[in-house]
Length: 589
Image 1 (cartoon, rainbow, N blue to C red):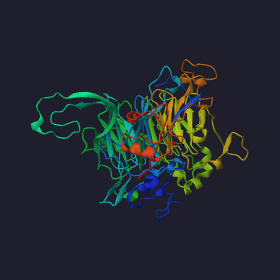
Image 2: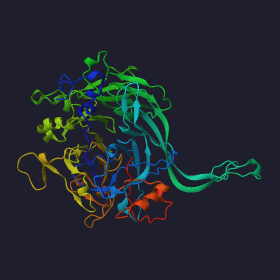
Image 3: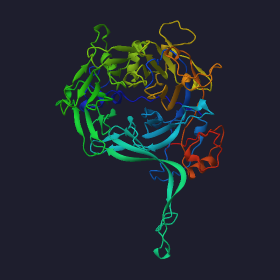
Image 4: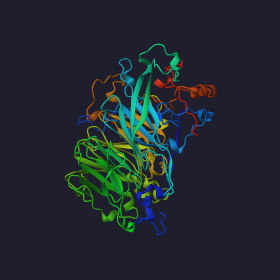
């Protein structure tokens, strides 16, 4: 069952960071009242063929056996099986992140939930299934809160997820909402202790008088259980909304950034942080810019970068001063007076900043472009890529419907040779830095049929258009791709389109048969991405149902129409043929 939901737009005051500040500080575009008026360097994106590995829908409900929550016994409404528009704002994906090996993929949504997908192990008998991701763990990371001192509602939305490098059998990740950062441990358990002396098999205390022999507890095999437990909670350090978190290369510290401040944390200390950047002026009426994104250097633990709403980037060195209010390098592109307009300051605001894997370059994303900066050249970017320049004539209408305040992310591929970012109409763009070629692709349920061909899309600006082109006036601005992720070492990408998660993989690298030819090697840059994308399989994962009464009630109340179930350890206690695939999605509270 395929579901889609147009992205919901908040008011302008909730979109642009300047409007999130106290005292109603306004930008120059507002009225006085505050109303808004590792692959080889040859790997490229110019050519090639990719496939859609799977398309996933985020779960509506999360069961936490590891968190010892009570099983939900409410009545389940199955009307969603017939309603393809069934979805809520809480289901909209708000962040996507691969771990350092690419074996795990984490997503967060506006409902405060984190869903982790694990890559299937490669099978010699089923080579075409390599690259698929199945649900590994789900848990509720954040709950809605209310600050009674400030009369402020704190949303549960997951703003960012960052993985820590794996040091043992467990996985660790950071997740944050607007105010609180949490460190989570995700671990597996396949054994349970039995044979206690003071407790019976059901956990009740035994009468000491009945204990006549001494038993040695033993570990018995059990069905695999994935547990997510919070290990640290970092709270009460941010007055404004957290927009970024970044793990340092020393793996002992991380930083969190809000609109006006950046704090440095130690993973072992939750009650104290060090303020390393503070741009809050003594008089808030003098505020002209806010922090929009921040990230640590991938190799130098003393260096970090942060961007602002004025389109500037500052590189700071913590060795120079404990408080890095004075930057080491300042990156800014001079504005062309001929392009100056009413919306110039809004569209120049940087929504995302990323270091390259090599640490030599910085990539920034503003509303219309992606720019690549060399750390040794501050006066202008070395590369500028137009993402959707055809929208320049539509800025007025985009301002009226608040789309102009959308915050798009950008990512590098493993070799820093390709850049990817999202756009409207569920389009996403790839730019090859070596060949200067680019491609526009669409993630949509209409094109997600098995073996369907996903051809590159083109947007027509003029009046006449070809059959395979789409007019600018036909673009759906409610469908947008804000969050993307790229596998750290392979051509696998994850694209979040509202409540849908699409996973694409380069077809040439997975060994499936193409036109009777069995590729045996990774293709050169001349063969990448020129051919259309081919969809090999669509997997609909709407919910991971834990063992218990929920599943029994679900089976008794939901007619098994064309349901499909995905194999998962949570289902292993039920006598179900796993060659089937079942997609079940109970309603929200």
